[in-house]
Length: 366
Ligand SMILES: *Cc1c(COP(=O)(O)O)cnc(C)c1O
Image (cartoon, rainbow, N blue to C red; front, side):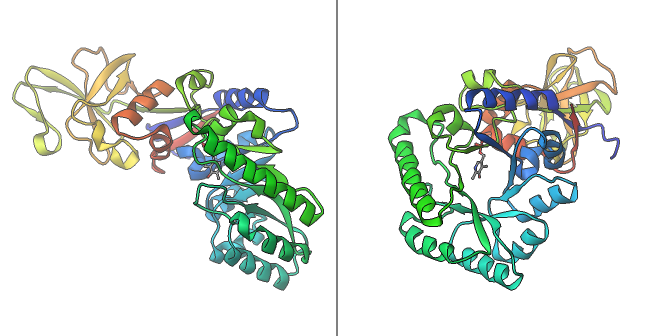
């Protein structure tokens, strides 16, 4: 693709390790849906999907255009679009994507399209709101929805699903148990009302870890594939998949009183050696990591990021590090480093990973 020196290497064997880690914990019949939205959590959804296609039965993306990108790259596996909009429905059908149907408005619009284009048993995924209050039919809507679904041959409820609100927190077990109970009751109604059984699924990564009894027919795993569980103990059993690397473009020897970077944010107190690295906030490096707060690794040693993070560059203090221009720089290559960045920037690894921008080259190593 290009010869950028700033690269996110996706570790295929780590991805496979993580997938197998969850497979081992699940009933052998439970299907795994790999969530590859947001460019595979900041990496490359297409490369991830190609790598996993033979190993998982289903993919999910958030938006329609993400699903189109997978189809255009030749992915044949079924793809659930978690958050489609009415204007997308034509593309959904053209690209054989499977929509989440979450309210009557999108249901009626899709049914109209299905009737006009004479679709037969087109797979849809009905989402139930069991307490997250984000997307989904309320349980009170189920009888009306079922009455309509029973009458039509254009659509088939491929799956019925819901999403947990606090699957990572054991203290909220009562709330989660209630969500699962509501889902089970409605699943029975669907099965009876439709005369066939849709695939049932409610668990995300931390749901699989904390509520394996609620695995139903399928689970939706996102962050777990990319190396993060809901706590350190679980994360330790997973492998890091996202390795962000760059190189030293230039080294400067800074005299005391001289400054480095915009706003002269760093002023040298003593003779200082700095490395300029071609990665900046436009690549996903938060400005909060500047001014000595964050660091990179050069030849295995920590080099503090000094001065302000620029759009396309950072400068690091390499005074005590033996290195030369062209040497490798590691921004992160472990869950600990990613977690540390998330902590510093007051966020969670989900955001740290998905912040890696489209400008960074992505390469999956099998
Ligand atoms: C993003 C998402 C997932 C994946 O969640 P993880 O916590 O990353 O495993 C599963 N289901 C839905 C509906 C999602 O939006």
